[in-house]
Amino acid sequence: MAEASPPVEVDHEEDSTSLNHKPKSLVIFCDGTAQDGLLSRTDHTTGKDAVTSTNILRLSRAVRRSSKLTGREQIVYYQPGVGTDADFYGRPGGSRLSVVAYGTTVASKIRDVYGFIAANYCAEDDICLFGFSRGAYTVRKVSGLIETMGILSQQQMGKFYLYWQYLIDSSKGERPPTPPEPIPIKVVGCFDTVGSVWHGPGNPVLDALSIDDNKLVPNVKVALHALAFHENRPEFKCTTWDESNKSPDQIVKQVWFGGAHSEVGGGYGSPELADISLFWMVDELRTGKLVDIDESMIEGFRSPVPENPETRLWGGTMPRNSWAEYGWFRQLILWFLVGSADRLQEKEITSESIFHRSLLNSPSKLLKPKNMITLDKLRDVFSKELPRWGEWNPKLADLGDFELKMQRQWNQKLDVRSSMPVEHLSQIRMLLEGVPDAPRRRGFTSNAALTLLKYTA
Image (cartoon, rainbow, N blue to C red; front, side, top):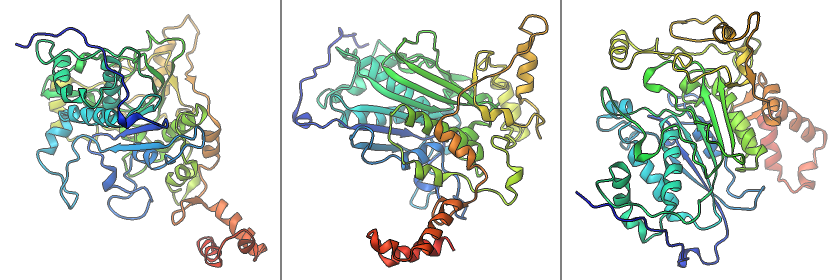
């Protein structure tokens, strides 16, 4: 049995890698279970992998290399989700089913992200963490590690696994060093955190690394969480932040959006609902000047308008019943192991929760209502808690400028070839046709003008 050593402070002496350092932003994206952005597409073209990209992938692709807000270089790290190991042809390898179901390899994802930060971080750098599903669980555990032992030097990383072992079991390994000063994390942005990690059936891993799963780490300046209102699978139970110990200078926003788990985080073939949560996250990053995102790319990533756009209401897409999509045998097994409950029954949604305005347009009559909730159901439940004749109404998050802009464009057709709303392309075409020599005067080649005209014809 290893003897616990006394706490050691982190040595912050600068090494050769940090001399003459210009502060930068480390922007880390951890994708959801079984999601690999390098095998999916964001261009909405035909093909079996089209329109399967998550919001994490779409965000990572839209980060500017240099921030116009801060002048800092923005270094992007994208990590595929748990259960994405694949061969040269993109085919899954190993026992992928159990890995996906139990999330057993999430520990290696946490270590990889921490290792990337330790290898690249210098004093005054910004750390920005984003994740979906178990990827959100990953970045939240990483933020906890940074609070616990700071960011290890290159020399100290040789003992990283000893420190890891101690955090799992204090009778093993070696006690990690204590950071003399908290290392700030600029933002943690999550899409529907799933904290369900299992050693096996009926054997969950709780509060791994001695970090409470619901903990809001005090050195996180801004915490953003988009939550799935309609998710009802027991193994996808969400893990919200506990805001009871939130400090006055922390900004925490946890907002409920219509849709199941992958309708809020992205990954389904019809991403209309995922667009709404993506636009919210981009707006928060924009308003807070947290990460510089190319908004024109985000606009191009939005889902194409269907043939009858008048039938598609903003936020009015019929949510999927994830539980009902399971076969009866899997439903039976899960019911036996962990039961089934919506997020109202799990008490994740309360009368004080904040909801996105688009949820007001969510259908009140569902195609598959079993184990599903609606705002009407919440009104019935929460109104009973009020004095006689009182009626509960949801607290709604305000829409930002970018969200309002995208709401106005909701049913504008998107030109897939250029990823730009057709209305904008038509305006460009009119300008070029009305002033034939404009491209020449502004330094464009005639080929560029012809290309623009071709795509707007």
